[in-house]
Image (cartoon, rainbow, N blue to C red):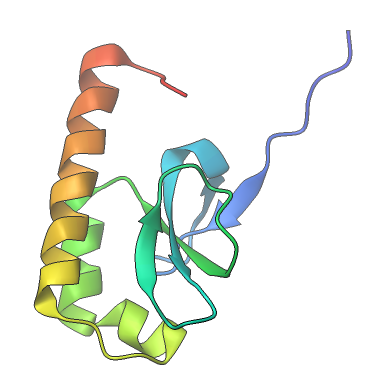
Length: 99
């Protein structure tokens, strides 16, 4: 049986490579709207972030997505992102590997 290739992506904050399933995709569409891409298939410029609350807090502190996407984001976006990642991290710990 042939082994499947695991797609790897780079975490925008830490610079570490990780499997795509272990990261959250943040996307900026052509209208400069930035949002969390839960499916990983939205069109637009994407950047990846680890499912780790501490990394998300570093992203907020350094305003990472403001720089990456060249837009001005509210603190609300970063707070929602931290909350979303906290939820994903808790689900991962409870249920193990999910889709």
